[in-house]
Length: 438
Image 1 (cartoon, helix red, strand yellow):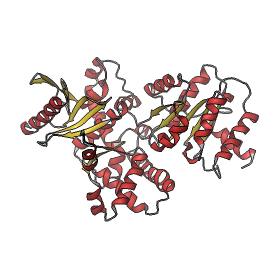
Image 2 (spheres, rainbow, N blue to C red):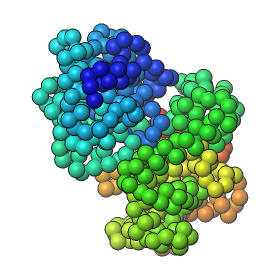
Image 3 (cartoon, helix red, strand yellow):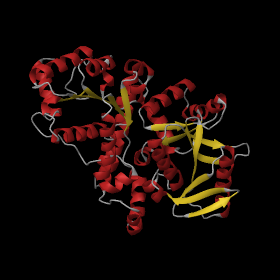
Image 4 (cartoon, rainbow, N blue to C red):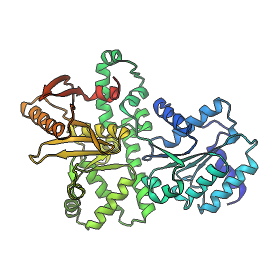
């Protein structure tokens, strides 16, 4: 590619000659990026497509410009621009050299963004070179968890700080809709609007552009496009998969069966394919952040491997758009939303059963210690259901020596004490907005 072609592409993605669209501010996420940027390490931002990774960096850079950073001190390279050809490390070096000679005007601190960089083999060496030799603030984005795999982490060891970007949390979703919850008093005054919004959030999810779209048909078209883009760009093209139909079938099967245990052996029989195909394709899809699999908690690694894993989707709107049928089972959808909320804060999450088959939906493990047990039960009104949820939670609390347990419901709010242990029943909508606050 010649210099003129490269400059034309760069001009479209940078602040040099025009303002860039930076979308609706996500203040909490922006604060996180600003805080982590203070560490002066390579910033690695990962997450599913269309969750706002590139946008949040542009918001951060826009704030830097407002505070005095020269626009020419910022370089954004979007490697998914279709005008780029023959993407390799040599082209990446050439792009940077052209920026240095044609755009950069001063010796002030630089900010370089390598957007969706995983298509460049050897990118991690280039990023480390900029960070160490040029003392440049480097931002990396990627839609695949391979970005943090051992092969890259070895080169970047001790030089990177990571952030995952998810679709909008329920609190962010309300803010996008003009509802700002600043205090517990707001929860009372906005209670009915919040509960109505939760139903919308459950159905359509929290992808930023979808949340801002008014037309329901457009929402669904966007979500289906996201689904196809993830499978094609992040799986099919990356791994050279030919049987796209089988891949899509597997993804839709998982989407239909969220919040449920799934075994590879059972799936291979249902889809009439090999065990190896199911395992590989499942791993590829998981790597895109579209699906998450959690294991049954056990002190035995063998038991963890042998037991079915429960599956959750990054976004219930995505799930409802592409699954075989939209389920009115709010319980499973709400459980999925609770999982994603927990996943924002914790990486080590399990489900659990004891020898009597008493179950708990989520155990949170931190530093090799179970710190939280959570049940999700949308309708707790039935006596048998209530007894089952409490007994399962108490069993886990006794096993892991927890003094407090949590049952998330549609609207039940109370506190009980059983066997010197406290169980709180909290409405899901309230927990999603106040989790972590005193």
